[in-house]
Structure formats: C-alpha cells, structure tokens
View 1: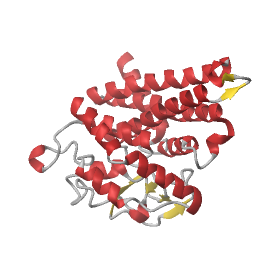
View 2: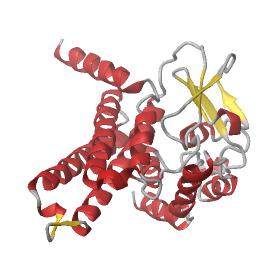
View 3: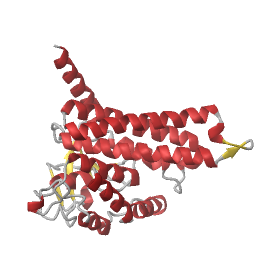
View 4: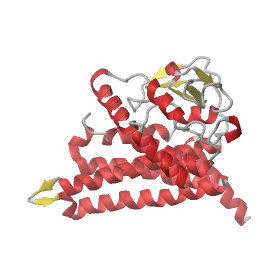
Length: 288
C-alpha cells in the first residue's frame, strides 16, 4: 500500500484539509457552499478518480486496497462532493477520471449533489430536495426503486466512515489533553478516559475489518466492514462531542460535522441494515 499511502499524503498536500475547513466556515455563515471545482480537478490530477483504471487507459493502475486508503483520507478531511459516484464513473463517463466532470448517482432513493452534477447516473424523475442533516451534503429524494448496492460503493463508504472515526479519535484525545478542569486535564478523569478509549477501540476494530475487506473483496467481509465502520464513525463522533461539550457544536469546530456526515453516509449503498442482512445470509450459508 506504499504508493497509495503517498497518494493519501498528496491529498493532504493538495490543501484538502484547508479547502474543507473553508467550506465548513462558509456553511456556518452563509449556508452550503458550492462544490469546489478547483479541488475536484486537483483530485483528478492526483489520480483520485482514476486510481483503479488501467494505466493503458490513462489511469493509475492500482486496486481496491489503495482506493480504500484514499477514501479514508477523504473522510478524515470531510471532503464534500459525490466522490464515490465520480470514482466509480471513471472510464465510463468522459471527464470523470480527470475531475473535469462531476458525476452523481441515485443511491437508495437519494441523490447527493444533484444540482452540482454534470452527469447523474440513474433515474431522477420526480426528484425533490430534502433538508440534509449535513449542511455540506445537499440531498434529493427520488421515487425510483432500490437497486442492489455496488460492493465497491459499500466498501468505499466504509472507508470514509473509517476516516471520520480516526479523525474524531484524534480530536477527542487532543481536547482531553488540552482542556483543564479543577486544575487537571479532563482526560485524567475516568469518565472522559473511558470515552476516548471506546472511540479508539471502535476505530481500530473497524480499520482492521475495512483493510481486510479491501484485500479479500469478499461480500461478507465488506458487509462486516460496513457495519463496524458505521458504528465507529457515528458512536465515535457522538462520544467526541461529549468530550468537547458545547463547543463541539460551534461552527469553529468540525466535531458536529463529522457526526452529521456520518449519519448521512449510513443511508448510502443500501444502508447498514442491508449489510447486516448480507452478513447474516453469508454466515447462515456457512453453517448450513
């Protein structure tokens, strides 16, 4: 995974964190910002969308494990936009691989970033806007039937959730060390220490599952990874908010946005319920 690790660092060097932070500040003062097309093209230049395309076709020629590492970084930075839909469209939709074309997709009756997309995959007839939990993720609901989720989309969603789980773990630990009450860092108090430990355990458990599923590409492994990553992201962000207290809900803080984005992701790619059913069916088949 060495080349992908370098790619992950390159995503950070491409000002992903700074641009995402700017979007968060804008959301807090003037509503949802438009999609950052310059960032989208920068990601295209880095090979983010063309990562799994063969080199002969102009892609990077890497695989699913490397894609998981990059999408983990995207989740960590709270990068806005239909990243997974555009990544999956690379090679099939002109301009998607280079970031010149923004691709959205119908996913379980929802479409993210419909108004900003150049191409939408799926039937959006009758699409109506819905108020999203995450101010950086505009949503539309469509009456189309639910299709079976793409296993790659499920795994990449899990990777983004893993990025959030890792980031809120860092934020909770940093705040627990820096914030003092009664002359001591709050991390010295058992209740806070237990919260931070739980965040770490769930994040590392999910990391092992997501990385393993990226290697095996087994549907049951992917389903298990999705379940664990969703839990690590949502519960981790909630506990991180508790560590931060009221300041975690302010626009200067990214903590509450990690929770809101994690909630939105739980609705993608069939949702966690479908992953639970897929895992249960696989386990039942093994014991039959």
